Image (cartoon, rainbow, N blue to C red; front, top):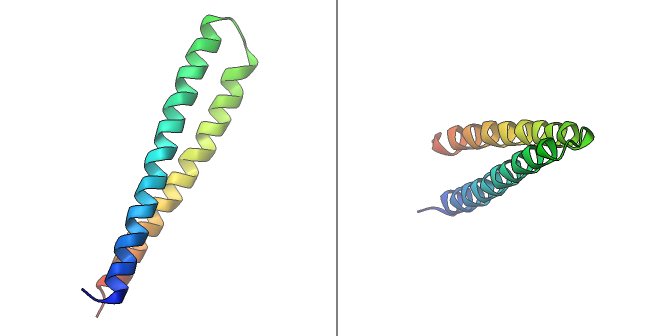
Length: 76
């Protein structure tokens, strides 16, 4: 395994951990929103939805970067 492949593996691992943590945060935001709706708090679900949308965009960009980096590493 070359140094470049080891760096790619490390980068993939770090990005996947970051994506996993972000998904857990999104699940927490969803639970927070459901709890706020049951308590009749109207502002909290809106802010949680905005934060979840931002995390969704960030995760999408990270996944696209992973695919791009994977294609770049596989080239000879």
